[in-house]
Structures are given as C-alpha cells and as structure tokens.
Length: 168
Ligand code: NI
Image 1: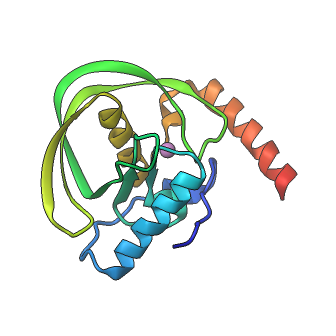
Image 2 (image 1 turned 90 degrees about the vertical axis):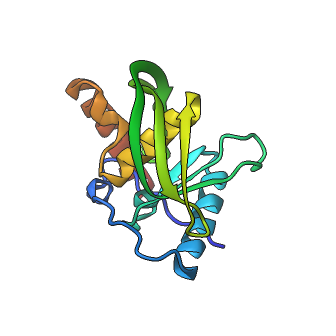
Image 3 (image 1 turned 180 degrees about the vertical axis):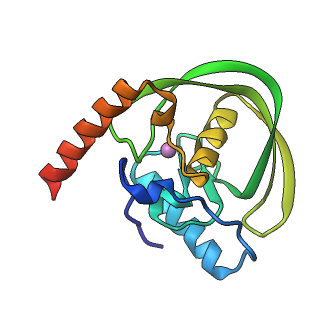
C-alpha cells in the first residue's frame, strides 16, 4: 500500500469527470487499498479517486472510529428516496481547514459494485448518505465549495492558494 498525494482546491484536476470502471481487477483493488491508507492517514471519512488524481469512479468511506467499517463504492448510481434537504457542516480533504453547511437530500438509494466487483443496492441515510453524495460530487468534478456563495468560495480559494504558495 502507498499513501497518495491528495489534490487541493483550486487544482483544476479536481474538475475532471471520472470514467466508469470497466473491470474490477488488481489495479483497482490496489487503488482502493491506497485510497484507504491515504484517507486514514489524513483522518478523513471519505475519499474519491478524483482526489488522488485517478479519474475513475471509485469511492472509499469509513465512518467508524477505528478503521472498522471500510466501504467501497465503484460506479455508484443514486436515486433520491427522500428529497427533503438536510444541512450538515461538511469538510473535505481537498479543502483542508474549512467546514461549511451544505444541504443535501436525506435518504438515497445507491447501486454500485463492491471491492470484489459484485453489484449491490442499499438505502442510505444520515452521515453515510451525506458522505456518499459528497464523494459522488467529486467523481463529477464538483466540490462542496460550489454550493457556497461566490464570495465565500473566493475567500477559501485565496486562503488555500496562499497556504499552497507558502508550502511550495
Ligand atoms: Ni471531499
């Protein structure tokens, strides 16, 4: 396993639309292992392949406190079950240091492939529903800052660019 570099806003590569995975082979399982290691190391609860500059539809999520519940979603498709919106303070490993409230549908049904390439369907609510929708946005080249006002997004962009220049 290897820790991969996480792209940060406003890196234009985060705007790439991910392609569907054709076959869940050893290349994809290696990617999944690396994504979990990268996410755990960064203390995240979800990561999309887009964030490590791989533009294929792979998402990893673990909402447990102790790496106990690794979840994999390959080529996910969602259907909104309860369109009522719920606000939640979201953060993102690609937008480090910022948390802002985003409203999303409360209950969704997802169909995806698991780590073995088997299809499954599951109804998600609560944090898992929020997290999956956030990660699916990444696969479409979208970030949670896109839901904020232009002024707020600009302020976050400037702060992160300053930090990125300082590190370079
Ligand atoms: Ni994110």
